[in-house]
Length: 370
Image (cartoon, rainbow, N blue to C red; front, side):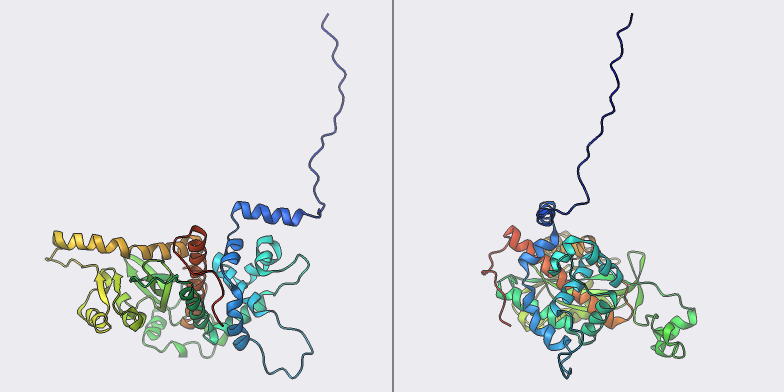
């Protein structure tokens, strides 16, 4: 006879307990985020955001209040850090509001506890609009640039210039409307429809490169060749040729240094601009129809490209790690402000990397004088 079966006993499975907040759970979660590579924690450790407070309080606070009654304003540094979050993750106002409410790493970066309220999307939008209207993005970039120079991060052993496309939402206009926009008459097209006019970008332009069409603007940047930090920038419609911003991007501080660029900057006029400022041009030469480059010129271009190609690391980080060059802006002024914040955010990440990996010998980390 077969052996008798053992009686079946129903066993209750015990799962890990959930739904209860322990005393040290938040600290443990924060520590786990650090181990997983929380970029915001690294950024907070490397960048002293308080260096921006004097500028922000001077220009962004309402000084005309008669008394302290009523709703208190949000901390301007907190709002500025929210704009940095928007640029790191390429978020809209509603998107960043949701993420601040949802994500522990965002709240820690902003210094918010779990029960603290946070600004809504309208407040964030208004703050950014006023900041760009006052062109404070440029002043904040210059403030951080001065801080980087005080650390010795700008090496001044040559610069690189290049441009990258900044794509914006494409407009759906008629042929006749586009012709008027190109002729500078776009402001009158929707004068009787203010709501529609506010959604029409009459500053962005089409251009082609390598057979591919682009619509929007360009970020023309000058980068320190050694540290790969952005030291100057200009924003133009996409149709503006790269070489047309050469004069604006260079100044007397570049005297005696090499300036590296690709063949888009070739030309006698550009040579005169650079030599007139005492800058040593290191521009890749270009082949022409019926006049190919000699072996000597090709070898010279290869040597120049070893330095010039470092600017691609800068644009590559912004494009791939920040999703930065596809934005939803209307008009040159807004785009200029957002691109300025993108460039500033890149510099913050770059100095964090330099400090963490000890890529350069820097001065002791401390806030620059206000």
